[in-house]
Image (tube, rainbow, N blue to C red; front, side):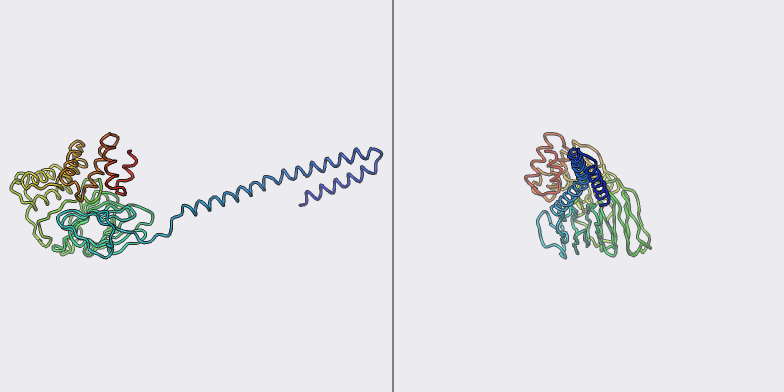
Length: 371
């Protein structure tokens, strides 16, 4: 280091001069020694911060490495999928819902609810998504938006590409008709009747019929439907192969309508935004045909999300749990009760009950946060 050498040479010259000058040499030598000590001390002080910075930096690097090593997730494999909270080998298998709804849950939090008379196949899963085929019927998908998420839903020759959103997707193989209702986010729809892929956004409803080979027959706005997946109703009586469905009865004809007609009417009314008619159709199913369980759940859903009647929503969700305590919609019903009663003793009781019944369920985080 040039500065240090120069200083030492200068001090050496001072020593030589002082020893040649006279009798008080000892005093002056002590002066020189002190200067040497001060110089060495100053040099150590100058170098100390640099060494300290190096030590601190090394410590930070080591700590960062330790944290990254501790928290970095292991290499992920493909997403796993469970049916009604039961793990099973579902990839490549067809799952069919007959008279009741079913629900598929993926390990990233994504869920696919099957309405009555619906069949789907999880064709494949990857670490960031998967491919789901809707063979017939109607499914509700709630896809969790995560980084690099890639999901594809197939209905007949149509493809719906998704990153994170909530939508209903229906396919009738008999009439070759697709229906798509977007509740949140956006998706990209492609198929033989579309000249190019088109973006479908929140609030839009699209209906395509393959045999006409025309542009979208229906693109209209529908109210946003919020809430958990897999609460879809469906017409259990009407066959998917019917190309000319029976006309839905009007409000004055509900007492004469069949079970299938009332299911159709309630579903169509919900999607078109006529919550009052959907409610009346479900009430007719209960009063004229004794249809319990799912009708109560859907009445709770309509009152909560469309009619905004909190008290009635709670009453109908509680009715569902009384009628079908272990039904396929029980977990969602408890979840809705937690949401609607948040901040109350009833809500905390519902949260405790939910965690006892579904310790790893969809609403686990919400229930824990409210306790």
